[in-house]
Image 1 (tube, rainbow over the protein chains, first blue to last red):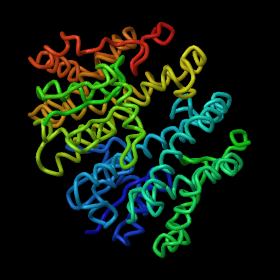
Image 2 (image 1 turned 90 degrees about the vertical axis):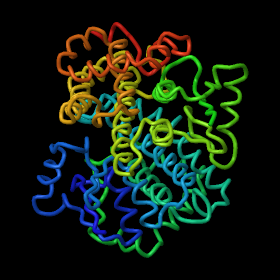
Image 3 (image 1 turned 30 degrees about the vertical axis):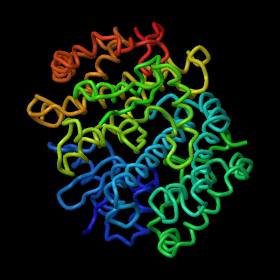
Image 4 (image 1 turned 30 degrees about the horizontal axis):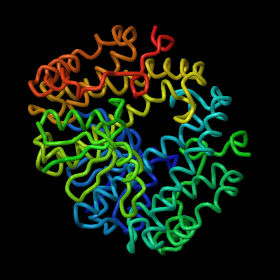
Length: 234
Length: 234
């Protein structure tokens, strides 16, 4: 199966969780909106009748068009060997990915507490307050939860002895927090030794390593979810 | 199968989307945390090893414990006759429910733009700005999307000719917006005639009607997701 991923071409953003899964599995896929007339094709698909996605990213798989990151990974997981085959394991993994989804919204809200349609520059003061709260309460809660799961499961991967797509997402969260908040993250890292080890293990996997070194991996930047603003990191 | 729902006992909140599905299907279920020692039991389940949920609501179904509203509905849907049996239809329905999930976060952020751990009283000014943006940009985008789907599918239900759990969620969104923002919603309603008709159709279903009239339906209040603050509704 040749997959088509549709996502904003200039950012890692939410599409990155899907890209990492496709890359790890060496799936045959096109990152459509990064090609010529790709964004126009993407916009057109959101205007169709039938089952139009609400927003990118979405995945075209044969005649199926699947939106929402966690839903895409739920579909791809067993097909790419990145999820268990049985329903209980799939639901558990999906539940964890939905918790990542929730966390990603909160990451975004650190620089956009007044909403996604205003510029960061117009909400700097509330962004500072939200970021303070994010690091005091939310990062320890979310990352602590995944650290605990990892430890309780023996420390190899989040759901046990085999790599799944949630481990790739953990890699991305650690990378993103390090990029956006280098100072705060440095102070926090001692609380998540298991996740750091997992991050290194994922980064060293041959397909992920090759991906990260390729130009298919877009660099972090200030249009994405994880943004580095000095005023928010001290 | 007797289901056990675990959710905060004093609010509709995120648990309500699950309650509506269980009630519509006349499922055999206990709303555990509303019973004696129920909250303690709920807290304990989040501390277990294995597959502890990150947060309520979660559903116990036999030996399975399933967290995240959309994941619970994905599981329950086909079992309760509220989702199609085939994979494409299930993924599409789930995608829509995940879009509702995103919208619910944004509803919550209207009164908590600086984060969930601070009181509304400590973030009144940013809440006003966020609410303004919410009604200018986000409500038309989300509710307009569902209105369009409904229209394009013939107007009976969101995904076609049969009721599914997404229709119950549409009912809840209309009810919630009417409760939290009566003035703003009144002005907006003319843009979503299809959703209003759907809301009435859901409310008139015998099982939903009986539920709404029972004390199992908790009243909207200012601890939930949809909160009525005069300062945010004009």
